[in-house]
Length: 346
Ligand SMILES: C[S@@+](CC[C@H](N)C(=O)[O-])C[C@H]1O[C@@H](n2cnc3c(N)ncnc32)[C@H](O)[C@@H]1O
Image 1: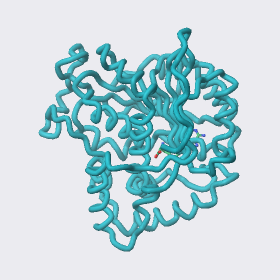
Image 2: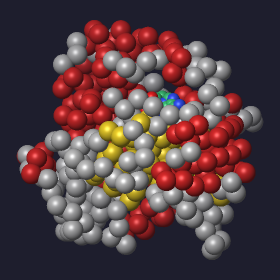
Image 3: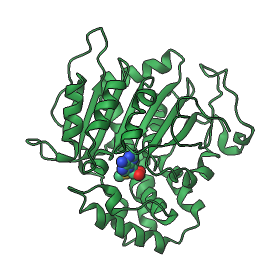
């Protein structure tokens, strides 16, 4: 187990390390011996749903227990406005973490995939990294449950880039126990990514002071349903420090709760103001992105069968067919970037 110097500055937890070792771009990376199971073929298909189902199955937690935890979480999230997520929801126990993963991760992951696919400037910039044979470095803020990781992996697969390079994730979250829920799964996943969990509380001044180290050399920052989790915990210093730290060309994706097109959503207003102040180029704003399309038929079919398995429990499809608020920004480069894409719902 080795610690990255960059992350050594924070309390650290190392998750499973899987390296891609196929033909292009990643030859210098060795495939760990533990990754030689039948699941570790060089297969290119990647199913978000299957990964989630493995976490649930491997947890050995009774479905009734998970259902109960889900009901509590869903009820708590309905009262989130004006309150920090940490006040309402604890991810300290495996029951609550696995319940969250089971209910929310699929749809959150696919939202991110969908945004990356639909924002051409961003997707071209990310694909360019792989075309150069480099590793894509991603920092996911509040990414503990793994949604952001799965969403980016799906994006790589959909663009046939799994074999061209690997992805490295730094997952920053105030709760790092999420990694224990994923360990049994990531050990068996095809070996194309590397992930590190770092304890990071974005509302803590000491952690915010580490932003220059954490965010200065990544290609992509993801914040999926993070703005709503932190909106009541004085997030401005974090957003400001994070945007300031980014190097030119870095893409930042924010996906959060829908709000009417004619007003700002208070969950995300602070982030948008900080982005404007930092001079970020807005590549995409969509205050009513419809989640899901025919592109995701396979994932949807798997989701449908998962829902069928627990009839009567409607917690499993919280966002499909619903609308989300999306921003994609780019840290300006010295060269002019393409103009903002259509602001209308896609
Ligand atoms: C609603 S979940 C979203 C998780 C994931 N991005 C997704 O889309 O499924 C919010 C996450 O933010 C984390 N979180 C909440 N407040 C935080 C803070 N102040 N600093 C860092 N992470 C925080 C929680 O632990 C949780 O993992």
